[in-house]
Amino acid sequence: MKNRDFKKEILKTIETKKIEPKSKWQFLLRDSIVWVFGFISVIAGGIFASVIIFSLFNSDWEVYRLVKGSFLEFIPIVWIFVFAIFIFVADYNFKHTKKGYRYGVTKVILLSSLASILLGFVFYATGLSHLTDRVLDRGIPGYTGVEKRKEMMTNQPEKGLLAGTLVLSPRSDALVLKDFDGKEWDVIVGKLLPVHFIILDNVETVAFIGNIIGENTFEACDVKPWQIRGESLYLREKIFNQMKDSGIEPPVDDIDRLRKRFEEENLDERNIFQLRNNVCEEGTSTPFFTKPR
Image: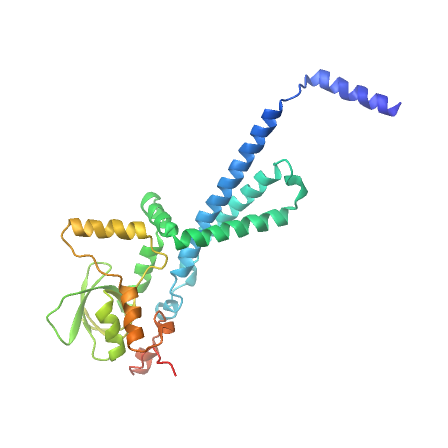
């Protein structure tokens, strides 16, 4: 009796609500749309993950000790939040697939996160993260790209950091550097060791550690290459082509040339990108490079 009543209730509900059977193609179409949106969510998550990786890899953590700034400036909190949103969107889409209900929320979120992070490293390695960051910097008001933030962080001469591009100078006791704000400085290099001059001979964009000793005059006691990690080869080629069209000779690959020079000098490359200011604090000229034992 109960089964019959139950069947009658179902039939009555179907008649009342005028429920009609759907074709198979409708279910297939719905499933396909859900999968497409889920795939797009993972790809978008990968792009945002690559921007996070790009930001973290270009954070000169030891600079914060010199300028006494907040390391939170380089932690991409906004992108972490956006990345989390796309992961949950991917989870929602997967849950609405034909067999998605079989998997727990935690498992789906972990797998989606892992897929997006792996894609993030791929996009970072191909330079897509740099390109994305540059597009966002130019297209979104109030957004400051990683490259600009790094320029601002490493170019604070009043706090002992001066960064920019070396320009030709007739002087032998000083170098001329045009900082990222377009201001030219005389950089006194008397405290630098020969190992530092290897950098200066092979790299055009550098960051000095030292002190202001006069108007537009900076005394350096340490130097490191200034670079953007995960640089977009597309952007690099585009900029170089613009330089050639303007009659300017583009620079060679500074970092590769520097590495080769250090190998020739039998110096330890592991410390090339470390930034140390104990030289300036102690008034000595101990380099931040060490020879292998």
